[in-house]
Every structure is written in C-alpha cells, then in structure tokens.
Image (cartoon, rainbow, N blue to C red; front, side, top):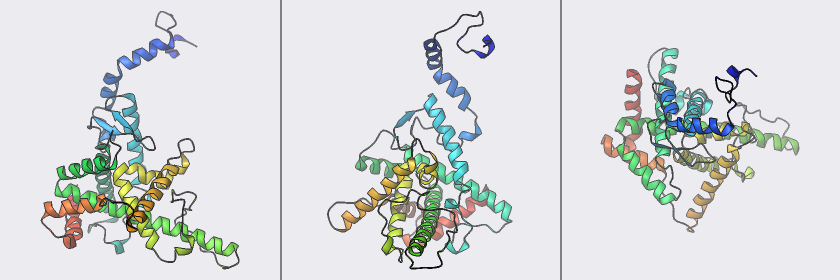
Length: 320
C-alpha cells in the first residue's frame, strides 16, 4: 500500500502504531466535529445546538455535543427526517381528518407540508433531548413539562398538530395491517374465502406491534385507540426515532429497535390497564399537557384548541 493511502504511515515512510492515530483523532475531536457541523444545512432540524442529546434507541443514553458519536447521531437524525416526512405515517392527504391545509397548487402545498413536518420533528427532538441522562419517569415528565413552557404558542401548535398527524398515521397503518392478517387467519381456518389484502403493504411482522394482540377483539377500534395513545406518548418521550422504529426498525437486524418499540408499546398498554383497575398511579399524557399549555398561551378553551392551532399552523405554512 502506498503511503498516500495508508493513514498509519507518515510522509517520511515511518509506520505509526494504531494507538497514535486514535490519540490524534481524539485530540482533535472537538475541532473536527465543530468544523464539519458548522453551517451544515443538514443539521438545521436535528437539535444540533443542544449541549447533550438523547442517543438513538434502544440505547437512549446521553451524548455530549462536538463528539464523533454526536456527529454520527446528527447525520442519522437527518436521514430519519428525510424518511419520515415522505412516509405514510406522516401523510396529510386525507382531507377528512381536517389537517392543516392551504389553498394553493398541490406541488406548492406539498413543499410547505414537508417544511411543517421538519419543524414539528425538530420540536420532537427537543422534547426528547431535554431528558438526556434522566431515567426515572417523574423527573422525565417534569423536565418535559418545563420544556413545553418555554415554547411559543405557534411552536406548541406545530408540535400538537404533528403528533396528531403521526398518531392517526399509526392508527391507519396498524389497523389495516392487523385486519389484513386477521382476514388471512380466518381464511386459513376456513372461516372466510375472501381474505382482504393489506392496502398499505404493512404486516404485523414489519411493524413493531405489541406482542399481545387481542385478535378476537379487533372488530372494534378500542384497543387500537389505546395503542395510539401510548404511541403518541412514546413518540414525545423518545422523539422521531420511535416512529421510525415502529415502521422500519425491523430492517436493522443487528440492533432490532422494532423489538424495543414493541415492548415499549406493550408496557404502556399494561400500565394503562393497571391504572384502570386501580393498581397503579398514572401520569397525564404529554399530548394532553401540550394542549393544556397551548390553551393557556393562546387564550382559548380545549374545545377550541384544534381549530386555533390549525389556523396558526396554516398561517405559518403560508409564510414559509
């Protein structure tokens, strides 16, 4: 190997021990990451200004800024945003859901929707990152509630609306996948001759669904709506990674974040059931806290909150 292609050989042909390269890289870690991240447009929505961020699950540990691990996490976040804003879980095309919309061409409206999603995902990173280094639930809830207080009414509107969008996307995708599998199961038992295809292309094996699925109770949406509430709560607890882990985590065969997300959903459902039976205490969902703080800052009632927030988001989208 020529000296030009060998990082362990000096310009004078002297071979350097691997430890020397490691020491050199470590010594310039802050300088290298500062130089490579400064003025990088890809880091605009990944919460790069925070001194400590939350590592991607299932690790979920604190990562200090201006380190190589921090830089890797930011690059990963940028790719994750690009994936989620075009995925059906953040879809806003169904007008029956009453999502924020603009009276302009499809192409222009699409671009502004993408920007709305980027800003909302950025806020989710902020809400998750404020808990870096905190593990116990009471302190996590307190820290996130404090962070929400620092947001403006417009930011709260963006956050609240995006979580509703992603929550509905979760519900639609999961419902189609489970009912499609249920239809196939019935067909295999000879109970149906016309199994229904899954329109979204997802199956329970490609989604991080909870392991305990009440197959005989899927004729109503009660269980799915409980799942959606837990999903929205975990989305705000762990940030956009949770949405990615749910729909695409199975593709990472080494880390299997989908198994982590599945267990998180099941734990949330178990806690919800235990609370309903009077066995444990419970915390208000973070989404309900978002709307409570928004109502106070926007000067509206909870009944008015959606229309007021939607209007704020639409004004912001028009100004992008």
